[in-house]
Image: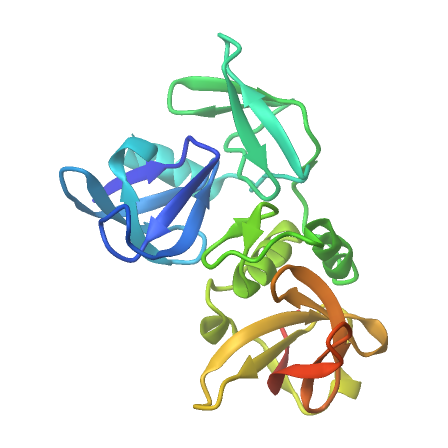
Length: 256
């Protein structure tokens, strides 16, 4: 088995080993993974955080030893909590670090990836946050544009949004909405929900295709064109701009 880490800001994870292939997710700075297959130009990987699989360009990742991989696994997770900042090496080369990026082996504003030592002076999150922090963290992504497969304030999809918000609060969600819907406890009514619970929505075929974070007073924050706030009722999401329902409610889940 081979292992790797993302040493760049934002790297696309694709469904096939091709630059024109669909992007299904992203690797952010500091994320580590197992390498399942190695081709000349591409590698198939499995992300450590959520076991999500896809193909990455070999030029955009760096291999690490099994020992380093295990040390990262066993060390305390530290995440960047600035909307955007940077890490610098000893030669003052800068790498952009976006919200939710991992900072491996972080101690006193220093971290390292393989033999490269970085300095990061931005704010961090290293503790599990209470449930009431979920909506507060979600607001950091407000107005971020929608991007299929995205996980950053520069482009994010519905399940990438919920996953990253929960990750920043110290909780693990799977990557896709259909996967996230298998987690947690089912709630029968919106009235039973609390801010921070997840609402899932399905299409005409009954497939779950959308997820958002419930707020107080029957509001929801979700990715639809951008990260936005709309109303939620027993039918689904009611868009406050167009004055119509846009998503059909399937189930509400309490994750924490």
